[in-house]
Amino acid sequence: FGVMLGIKHAVSEMQKNNNGSIVITSSNSGTQGWAGGAGYVTSKHGIIGLMKVAAMECAPLGIRVNTVNPSAVESRMMRSIESQAAPDAPNEVKKSIEATNPMGRYGKPEEVANMMLFLASDESSYCNGGCYTVDGGVTAGLFSAV
Image (cartoon, rainbow, N blue to C red; front, top):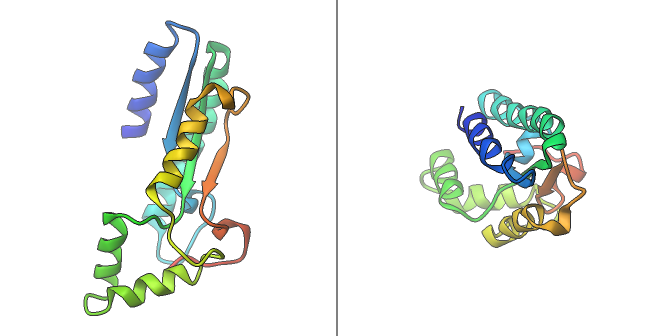
């Protein structure tokens, strides 16, 4: 409900100025699926669906809505996933995840932030209802998530 409530309250403020940009974080798992990921994948697909509806409903109010969909990013979340998958060999898990990425690495938080900054800015004034990947090419090919 967090994304829905965030949109609801942001729109109520932004419509006062007939202007705004809402940028929602989803995941590349919101654009594809992977075995064993039903709960996570479903939630991320749901976020993208909600964004698309909000983009259509908010456009007449001058408000744009988009998602940023990263793959693995250097973060505490990834350290936790690696450690849970193989407590004695988290670095091996990281290497296997990186091997599924055409760029061969995790993303950097600032790379995701830069996409979000672009979408929040007037430079993206005609971007509405889009899913913007920051994933090193993961969704470009036939890679499977770990």
